[in-house]
Length: 301
Ligand SMILES: Cc1ncc(COP(=O)(O)O)c(C=O)c1O
Image (cartoon, rainbow, N blue to C red; front, side, top):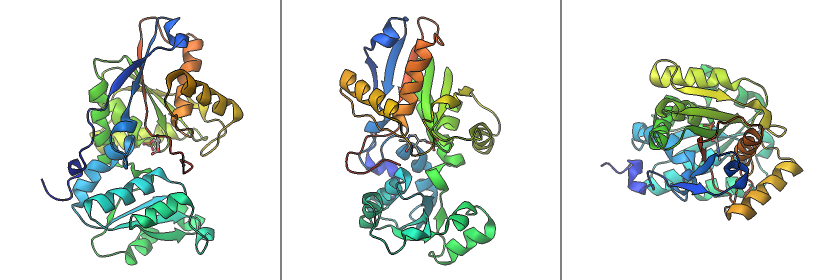
């Protein structure tokens, strides 16, 4: 094992799968299971370890450059991995208006973990995949820097998330996951022998194409039985509604588990709504993937 092997971080894998008693499911003959990926690692919780592990192995200790918004969980996880495994990290942050202002708690944590932050204009950030824009970022980075895309979603990330599907195979009939960039869903569906439900937290209806492209890149074509339910974004990325918050507080009171609001709560709301609509036949075992932990100190975008 080399020093940059992320398994040196001793991730808790397979993550626990816990049955929870919830009458909204039980009265329809359904079993709700929580797939506790939030317990994989305190600094790389949820899908972060699964998406980064193969990328960090490929980077093999070279500096890692990646992208995110001012509250990005992915930036925080990458910075923490750099500190723990000992490689340099560079974070390209959306919005040059943030430069020169005090760092918010999320970015302050990235900086404390040694990440070099660079604030990009919104237009440069949008164009970050264009070769000349990317070349501009890389010019200011050390030679040999390894690039991980926004949200950490690329072919290696999807391949890493296939193990999540493997852990659920034979133990659940439906797996539900919240989606941002779609990498977690692409891998989960590929590795799972049941049906996968993706719940986009962004508006826009573009995610299906992204998931297909990621599966093409990671596995050479479509994999698994998956679909999206686009009704539960609650206003879009980073947004919540009073109803979502009330729903999450009620779920927390019922089950004694702090619920991350911007992804996990929306996925759970989708599952409860679908159960109430009669969308699942009696006897279905439903695994809700807890892709993130609720961070009490930092908003979790
Ligand atoms: C807590 C949480 N859940 C789900 C997701 C969505 O993952 P993906 O971008 O792979 O769709 C993210 C973003 O990475 C996240 O931070």
